[in-house]
Figure (cartoon, rainbow, N blue to C red):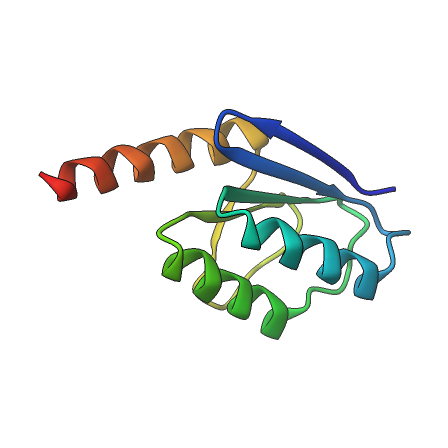
Length: 106
């Protein structure tokens, strides 16, 4: 079952294989509207990735000046989405992007 948690300005969504895709997409889209950075952690059992959904999600996050990172050790992603193997690395990645955005405002 999908779990959603928040750490600072980061929404973390942990997805299991049993989670229904349409429900997931609806909940994740709602999270994007809240304008938080977003981490989606895929279980190793998630065999199928929805490339178009993740690409749209990335565009929304970029338009909101927020980050989007996938956490996966198992998946090879052949499109321009930030993928890291651990949740800790995903949080670090977003924190670095936040600092870069702040520096660019100066």
